[in-house]
Amino acid sequence: MLNENTLSKMKEMNLTGMYDAFKLTLSLNDYKKMTCDQLAASLVDAEYDNRRNKRLAQRLSTAKLRYPASAEQVDFNADRKLDRNLFMRLTDCNYIRQAENVIISGMTGTGKSYIACALGHQACIAGYKVIYHNFNKLMAKLVMSRGDNSYLKEINKIAGYDLLIIDDFGLQTMDHASNISLLEILEDRYGSKSTVIASQIPPENWYALFNSSTIADACLDRIIHNAHKMDITGESMRKNKKVAAKKKNG
Image (tube, rainbow, N blue to C red):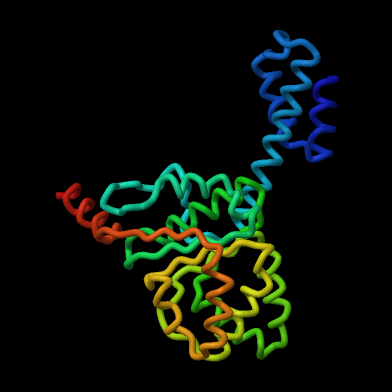
């Protein structure tokens, strides 16, 4: 009866991890093998882990990463010429603490978005607030926000994230409104927050994407000068996976 009351109170206080762990311990009679302090430590650890996992799940949900990528699943095939040492250094998230940027470039299908999402996933694990955006969709969203007077709110929301991932940057040249929006986003983040940019266009060719040389200089200065750069080569991984799947299926 005492244990049932304890379980009921745990549930009422929303101690889900502790409740599940205590219930399992009772069902297995493991508590009889534990000292009081061992049982208490076990229950506290279960509650701690449960809350930590919930917070991680919430951060990942908010991040809206394009792929459920992880650092452990990144392919370092020699043909890709992906700098393993650089990537592994980035997974410790020190670049976020230092408010540095990351630029990932390479042809379509080479896995740029996946790597960007893997870095985003790692940042979520480390407790950072992350958001992923396709560049063109983000610019379209900001155009719409100008119409309903929520533009400033959207810009401030982006500024609040520790890590902003901008994917598919440079697929088309930008109009003046996009130039201004990008500059405002980068200005808000400069020196305080980090940005990961994935693009098919190498950084040395980004200048031509802008319709204003002044804004181009301002944006590129805020992106490139403190950025870690990864250039991925090799054939399209999407194409290779399709070929492999066809061979497997006969």
